[in-house]
Amino acid sequence: MSKDLSLSVLDLMPVRTGQTTADSLAASVELAQAADRLGYTRYWVAEHHNMPAVAATNPPVSIALLAARTERIRVGSGGVMLPNHTPLVIAEQFALLEAAFPGRIDLGIGRAPGSDPVTSYALRQGRGNDAVAEFDAYVNDVVAWLEPEGVELGIGGRRYALRATPAATSAPPVWLLGSSDYSARLAAKLGLPYVFAHHFAGEGTGQALDLYRSLFTPGVTSAPRTFLTVNAVVAKTEAEAIAQARPNLLSMLALRTNQPMRPQLTIDEALQTQIPPAHQVLADAMSDKWLIGTADQVAGRLQELAERYDVDEVMIHPVAGADAATDPRRSPNRVQTLELLGQALHRETAATL
Image (cartoon, rainbow, N blue to C red; front, top):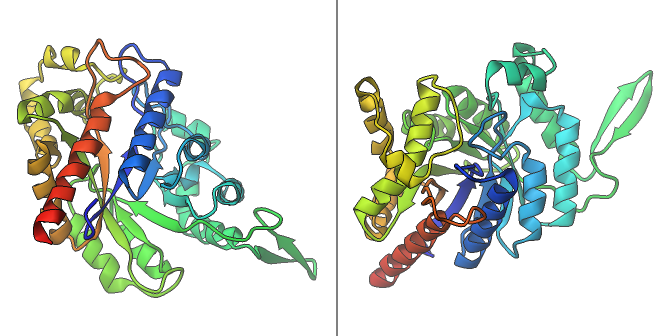
């Protein structure tokens, strides 16, 4: 791994044609173990609900599974959608994870629903926008409850101790995630580490990071801390990479154009699926922001992105699809993306020494 640029991984736990939820989890375990072996810094799992192509519904459960099957890599959420949960429950879950895997847990927090309006209504028990309106307070509560000493409440003239776990010795770092100026401003105000969802938004990254850095007030951390997320597919040839990216591109296109969602297509199915002419411009705009190509091509663009946004860490979302004949419990093209990219950055580092 490059001494100057750290790499991490974001995983939505995709479910493709012919896969079960159990298969998807097994494939993610293999990917996390590859990232661990290859020297990646952290491995985060997302939170999405009621989506046929995504198995990442419960970050704390996924984190426990992945941390138990890896050795040194940090494992965290990218992120927990806090309005879907009560803050104390999240603090309890991540305090327990930190106790089980000390120094290896990250809590990334977001405020998006992570699903459709009906599912969001069920998750939030009808509270909807009321839960979002309390997001700032929720974040503060989680940060406070995660501290080993917990908090004290004044009730009826008496002090009441409230702790996420009885005898913590450490707390996981809290990161704020977002794709808008709102999240950048809140992270700066609270002095929290911040990550802009470049892999999803693709626009406004520089503006959000500049805003965060310029408004930052020391709080949880003493100085601004951030990194970049990006979709990537790396293969032995550019043509192979383009083909491997197509299943995820079609899934994202369906999401953006309100089409019915289904399990992610295999590469073979995706190559046989035509993009409607009316959607081609959107498809091209999305894929242009992804890093797709050979290892040297992607490594070069990755270094350019890191320099442009002044970050020393990039979180890769490996979106390579699989062939129809691939073992359902594996995603070898996603593993290949991590392997080839890591090797390329090693070569770049060695060439500059």
